[in-house]
Image (cartoon, rainbow, N blue to C red):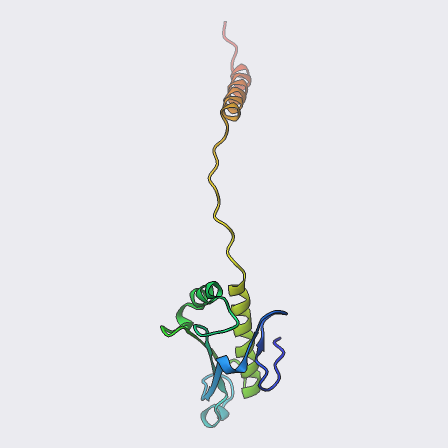
Length: 147
C-alpha cells in the first residue's frame, strides 16, 4: 500500500517520491459497484502523471515507463490511470496511486544486458561427436547376433 499524506506525493521507493505537483487528480462518475450511488456521486479517480516533464525520473526511466504504460500513456508523455474498483473516492484514490507506484517501480529497473552468442570450442564438438559414436556402437551391439 502506498503511504500518502495530503500534498505529499506518491512514495515509489526509498529514493524516489513523485511530488504532488507532477500529479493531477479528477473525480468522475463510475460504472460498476455502488447501486444508485453510482449515478449521483463521482467516486472514480483519473490520476494523471506528467512523466515527460518529471524531475525525479531519469530520461531512460521515463522511456521505460511510457513503454510499460502502453495505452495508458498519451502522446504528450502523460500516464493516465483510472481507478473505479471501489465504492469510495478515497479507496479509488489510494488504488490509483498504488498502481502508479507499481508501474514506476517496474520502470526504474533497467533491462538486463543483451545475451552474447557463444559457440562451443572445437574440442567440445569433437568430444560430443566421439561420445555419440561410442553410444551408437553400444546400441548397435544390443541388436541381433548374426552368423
